[in-house]
Image (cartoon, rainbow, N blue to C red; front, side):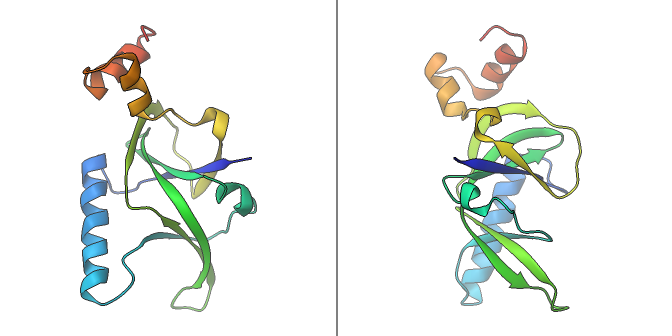
Length: 145
Protein backbone atom coordinates (compact mmCIF):
# COMPACT_ATOMS: atom_id res chain seq x y z
CA UNK A 1 0.00 0.00 0.00
CA UNK A 2 1.41 3.36 -1.04
CA UNK A 3 2.20 6.04 1.52
CA UNK A 4 3.49 9.53 0.74
CA UNK A 5 5.67 12.01 2.60
CA UNK A 6 4.97 15.66 3.29
CA UNK A 7 7.65 18.23 4.06
CA UNK A 8 7.83 21.97 4.63
CA UNK A 9 9.55 23.81 1.80
CA UNK A 10 11.41 26.24 4.04
CA UNK A 11 12.59 29.47 2.45
CA UNK A 12 10.45 29.02 -0.65
CA UNK A 13 7.46 31.28 -1.34
CA UNK A 14 5.93 29.65 -4.42
CA UNK A 15 6.03 26.59 -6.67
CA UNK A 16 7.77 28.76 -9.27
CA UNK A 17 10.56 29.55 -6.83
CA UNK A 18 10.90 25.84 -6.01
CA UNK A 19 11.05 25.04 -9.75
CA UNK A 20 13.81 27.63 -10.25
CA UNK A 21 15.75 26.22 -7.28
CA UNK A 22 15.50 22.66 -8.66
CA UNK A 23 16.59 23.78 -12.15
CA UNK A 24 19.56 25.70 -10.72
CA UNK A 25 20.70 22.75 -8.59
CA UNK A 26 20.41 20.29 -11.49
CA UNK A 27 22.34 22.62 -13.81
CA UNK A 28 25.05 23.01 -11.16
CA UNK A 29 25.36 19.22 -10.84
CA UNK A 30 25.65 18.83 -14.62
CA UNK A 31 28.41 21.48 -14.75
CA UNK A 32 30.32 19.59 -12.05
CA UNK A 33 29.93 16.30 -13.90
CA UNK A 34 27.64 14.77 -11.26
CA UNK A 35 24.47 12.78 -11.82
CA UNK A 36 21.69 15.28 -12.50
CA UNK A 37 19.17 14.02 -9.97
CA UNK A 38 17.32 15.85 -7.28
CA UNK A 39 17.71 14.62 -3.71
CA UNK A 40 16.63 16.14 -0.43
CA UNK A 41 18.66 14.94 2.56
CA UNK A 42 16.90 14.46 5.88
CA UNK A 43 18.00 13.27 9.31
CA UNK A 44 15.76 10.23 9.53
CA UNK A 45 14.98 7.39 7.15
CA UNK A 46 11.32 6.40 6.73
CA UNK A 47 10.63 3.11 8.49
CA UNK A 48 7.91 2.51 5.90
CA UNK A 49 10.35 2.82 3.00
CA UNK A 50 8.80 -0.03 0.99
CA UNK A 51 5.42 1.74 1.07
CA UNK A 52 6.99 5.07 0.12
CA UNK A 53 8.81 3.47 -2.82
CA UNK A 54 5.57 1.82 -3.97
CA UNK A 55 4.50 4.93 -5.93
CA UNK A 56 4.87 7.52 -3.17
CA UNK A 57 5.44 11.24 -3.67
CA UNK A 58 6.85 14.05 -1.58
CA UNK A 59 4.16 16.69 -1.06
CA UNK A 60 5.70 20.13 -0.52
CA UNK A 61 4.09 22.49 2.00
CA UNK A 62 4.74 26.03 0.76
CA UNK A 63 3.65 28.94 2.99
CA UNK A 64 1.33 26.68 5.01
CA UNK A 65 -0.32 24.93 2.06
CA UNK A 66 0.46 21.74 0.14
CA UNK A 67 0.77 23.01 -3.45
CA UNK A 68 2.95 20.55 -5.40
CA UNK A 69 4.31 17.04 -5.25
CA UNK A 70 7.28 15.16 -6.68
CA UNK A 71 7.37 11.43 -7.29
CA UNK A 72 9.92 9.67 -5.07
CA UNK A 73 12.21 7.35 -7.01
CA UNK A 74 14.59 6.21 -4.25
CA UNK A 75 15.57 6.48 -0.59
CA UNK A 76 19.34 6.25 -0.06
CA UNK A 77 21.53 6.13 2.99
CA UNK A 78 24.19 8.86 2.81
CA UNK A 79 26.76 10.22 5.23
CA UNK A 80 27.15 13.93 5.84
CA UNK A 81 30.49 15.71 6.23
CA UNK A 82 30.58 14.74 9.94
CA UNK A 83 30.10 11.05 9.12
CA UNK A 84 26.51 11.00 10.41
CA UNK A 85 24.11 8.71 8.53
CA UNK A 86 21.26 10.55 6.77
CA UNK A 87 18.57 9.70 4.20
CA UNK A 88 18.51 11.16 0.70
CA UNK A 89 15.01 11.31 -0.73
CA UNK A 90 15.60 11.08 -4.49
CA UNK A 91 12.79 12.57 -6.57
CA UNK A 92 11.78 13.04 -10.16
CA UNK A 93 12.40 16.71 -11.04
CA UNK A 94 8.84 17.25 -12.35
CA UNK A 95 6.57 19.27 -10.06
CA UNK A 96 2.91 18.23 -10.17
CA UNK A 97 0.41 20.86 -9.00
CA UNK A 98 -2.08 19.53 -6.47
CA UNK A 99 -5.28 20.83 -4.94
CA UNK A 100 -4.15 23.43 -2.36
CA UNK A 101 -4.47 21.87 1.09
CA UNK A 102 -3.65 23.80 4.29
CA UNK A 103 -1.11 22.31 6.72
CA UNK A 104 0.07 23.48 10.11
CA UNK A 105 3.83 23.82 10.72
CA UNK A 106 5.77 20.70 11.72
CA UNK A 107 9.39 19.64 11.86
CA UNK A 108 11.04 17.18 9.51
CA UNK A 109 8.79 15.13 7.27
CA UNK A 110 5.52 13.35 8.01
CA UNK A 111 3.75 10.39 6.45
CA UNK A 112 0.73 11.22 4.31
CA UNK A 113 -1.66 8.29 3.74
CA UNK A 114 -2.66 7.90 0.10
CA UNK A 115 -6.34 8.42 0.90
CA UNK A 116 -5.53 11.81 2.49
CA UNK A 117 -3.24 13.06 -0.30
CA UNK A 118 -4.55 16.06 -2.25
CA UNK A 119 -5.69 15.32 -5.80
CA UNK A 120 -3.63 16.57 -8.71
CA UNK A 121 -4.97 19.81 -10.17
CA UNK A 122 -5.13 18.08 -13.55
CA UNK A 123 -7.90 15.93 -12.02
CA UNK A 124 -9.76 19.11 -11.00
CA UNK A 125 -9.33 20.46 -14.52
CA UNK A 126 -11.39 17.52 -15.78
CA UNK A 127 -14.28 18.86 -13.70
CA UNK A 128 -13.86 22.44 -14.95
CA UNK A 129 -11.99 22.44 -18.27
CA UNK A 130 -10.31 25.71 -19.12
CA UNK A 131 -10.76 27.21 -15.66
CA UNK A 132 -7.46 28.43 -14.12
CA UNK A 133 -6.17 26.32 -11.23
CA UNK A 134 -6.42 29.13 -8.67
CA UNK A 135 -10.14 29.60 -9.49
CA UNK A 136 -10.76 25.86 -9.21
CA UNK A 137 -9.04 25.94 -5.81
CA UNK A 138 -11.17 28.90 -4.70
CA UNK A 139 -14.39 27.18 -5.84
CA UNK A 140 -13.37 24.03 -4.00
CA UNK A 141 -12.57 25.99 -0.80
CA UNK A 142 -16.06 27.52 -0.97
CA UNK A 143 -17.57 24.05 -1.32
CA UNK A 144 -18.81 24.72 -4.84
CA UNK A 145 -16.85 21.85 -6.45
